[in-house]
Length: 181
Ligand SMILES: CC(C)(COP(=O)(O)OP(=O)(O)OC[C@H]1O[C@@H](n2cnc3c(N)ncnc32)[C@H](O)[C@@H]1OP(=O)(O)O)[C@@H](O)C(=O)NCCC(=O)NCCS
Image (cartoon, rainbow, N blue to C red; front, side, top):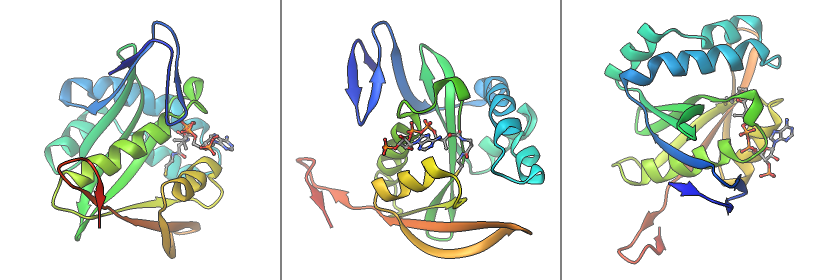
């Protein structure tokens, strides 16, 4: 938990703000749905079909939580203002559906979620994480560079929507917290 005047990885927490990135549960589903309704209708860089498919309802969210998707949310003063989900795909974790409320963009929330994703995967048996990114989604492309992801494939995720698949190998930490390959 972070609070007070603080900066972590560029995220600026103001006085009286409290930021957490934590696992979400079924009783958070309504708030996640609300967030998706704020984010995806305005995500104009994606085709309409993709945007509307991203606006999933509480029932689907709860269903996904029960069937292998790990949901994580950024809470600012307890309100969910960002979220991503991760699931196992072959021998890696794939991060998906990252969404930051438009009113809280550009303050490092997505970056905080990537840090969390890397730490989450590091604590599991999987040593590889991946993400599909739209080449025109500037913030996501910057994050791929910042966190040292490598572009491994270009393909159409749905007809007409070209994406880049990025991967990152996760390094381990020894008992002192030092990175080991
Ligand atoms: C993509 C998204 C999650 C980014 O969230 P965010 O919290 O605003 O991102 P951050 O503040 O952590 O910024 C990450 C980097 O992108 C930059 N950035 C953020 N918004 C930007 C913009 N509109 N244009 C250019 N750069 C931008 C930041 O400056 C930062 O770069 P830096 O580390 O070099 O300073 C958010 O814009 C969003 O929800 N978009 C709609 C849904 C979407 O596209 N999700 C991605 C699915 S893969």
